[in-house]
Image (cartoon, rainbow, N blue to C red; front, side):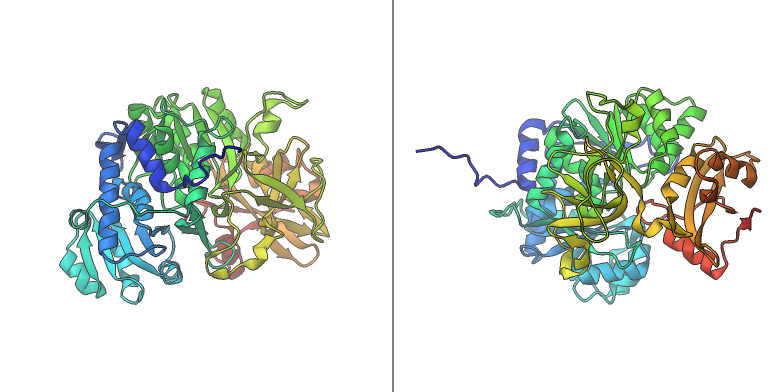
Length: 547
């Protein structure tokens, strides 16, 4: 008789917690809790074993409050100890952790709570004024638990809901871990940023959370292990914090939470003091950290690897960090992919390309993820590095549908349609040429806004740039370049246009130019092109046209 493996062993969030307690209970969670400018100096240190015990007490309190299996518990919190406890406590209760983006508008927050049907909300006291106005009409919510100092009686009167303090709530429950038999049960959920329509709910299973954490631990991922300390720059309300909290715990890496302050004057000194080895975040954050550290002689070189994602990473930024001896890799993924799907790491064999060919690709799929390009008629295109189509992706931590059955058109024959246009080369390296919605159709030909943005950010006088399409009577659409210049720069629009023309066909270079001090961002730190288009349409964003 053939022997079999222990297939009944469930890959769950409580299994991650058991492993961490058994092997890494003495590893420290570090939480920065000071004000902007000194957050790196005010920290609390808590062993993982203590955090795990509090997470189990949270699970017990939620069960006692009536949260049943599969019911949603929303969080409206920064990168804090209580939020980390919710990451483990809510799934351990049998409930579903629903992290709500703090940077959304009130109407979107209300819509998301209603759509998810959250039973309980865990709220950071520092953002109470932001969420309180939407709570009174949320019919699914039975209880609000507040972490931090707040007048709870007044808050209850304001919202008409039962509002209790987090520490009192924890003490009300007995340690509990739900007997999870089905690893495919929902563990967490997060809503997309809504830049292309209403936010859509993505539900992560216990199995997908576990496997995604394992992917982060592999050499093909970020190689996170017990010799690492991970700085959680990515907001934990966004796509499970890119899965880093679960990966850190499973790998035994220390975890550093910067609280609510994610400014360069906080992050750079915090890096120098706490010496993290791994981190991740969007390009705008890491641009600011690099420039601040350079200007203030701050050492960042404890970092061995940075995952940079959320938008296309400028080559100049990659070169700055690699020049310090820090491996900054462009990573690619979506809320729908948990989010890690691909990393732009040079392979061991150069395959006839130099390292910067590989570093400037969008990425090669991590083990477990498959990608392909598909033509408009549904034909699967060859992986030749030249055929451009919509990228589709599938894998064990890629969603197969949205919560509530909306957005069915985003799924095709078992694959997720990403909305990204690009190529895949014979080595599996993807290159996104643009978002489908961001391509510029000019005179029947396509212009890549991403390519123009990369060219402009390579100019030493450009701090940030966004390129969008605007209507044109003759050509249908033409590119508008919206540029933030570096402090003290006097570079002209004409000079920037010539810089672009040196690298692309003359007709592809923008003739329309706008200057801003700051480019607006979405709730997850991406450039808000939808808002920029609206501002052009209503005349609030003005520009000049070069002849």
